[in-house]
Image (cartoon, rainbow, N blue to C red; front, side, top):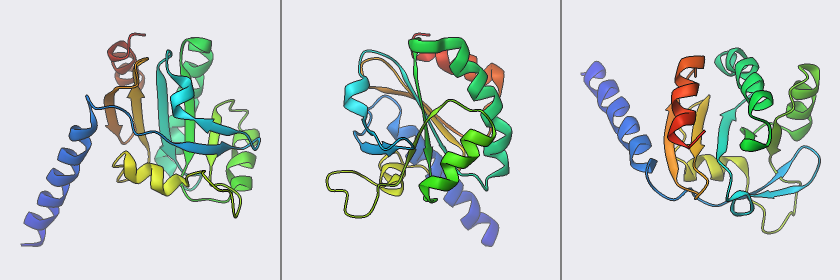
Length: 165
C-alpha cells in the first residue's frame, strides 16, 4: 500500500509540473545578492532560465558548473537566475563567490521589504517540489520546459532549443 501511495504522489507531482509548461510564467519580484530587486516581467524579450537550488543540495552542486558554463557561453542571449531556496542571503552569496559563479542569484528579501516575494512563495507558484528544478521560459514569458532533478548537457541543449536558443 505504501508503494502505491508513493507512486501516486510521484504521478501527481509530475502532473503538476506538466501543467505549468505552455502557460504564462508566474510573475515575481525578488532580491538578488547585490540587494537589487529583480522583476520577471522586466526580462521579457529574452529567454529566462530559472534554477531553483540550495547550497546543501548535492545534486544542485553537481549541476551548477555546467549551468555556469552555459551561462557564460550564451551571454546576453538568455537571463540565468539562480533562485536560492530559503537560505540566508549571505550563505548563497558566499557559495557563489567561493565557486566563481556569475549567476544572478535571487534570495529572500530583508525583513519588512514590502512588495517583494520570498523564494518559497515563488517556488510554490512554479510548483517546484524539490531541488534542483530548472524552468525554461521563452522570450514571450511562456514556460516551455520544467525539468526536475539533475540537468545534463544534452538535456540542457534540447531545452534551450524549446525557448529559441
